[in-house]
Length: 138
Image 1 (cartoon, rainbow, N blue to C red):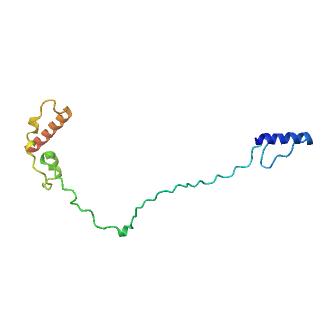
Image 2: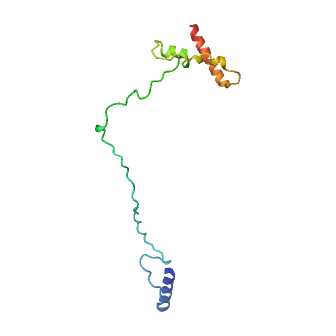
Image 3: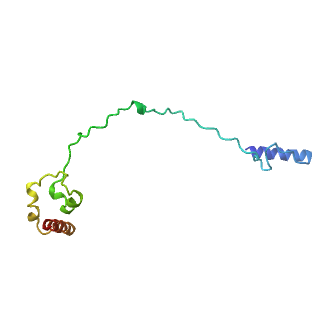
């Protein structure tokens, strides 16, 4: 709309004066502004952000007592869970505590039937047997 008014104004001026009227300052022939536009203003959110109500004290005010180590009961592995060769190399003085095997531990392999476990698991059990038998001989 503004462009049509500007063109109409220029056409009337040309008819009366014969020379084109000077353009308003800061505009070119097409009527667009040659000056850079004003910088945009920062928008401020009107929503109120909820603040956390957590207070963190200074490190000097913190409790210096370490956590109690008896929160969870200690877990010990069974003798059958650890290879004998590993125990010989890593614990030669038998300082680590192991629980005695449960009664079904010795009967476990005798109860395994063909197809109960995968081939990879069977190979692993055979490897443990070889490792343990080599340790018993020495």
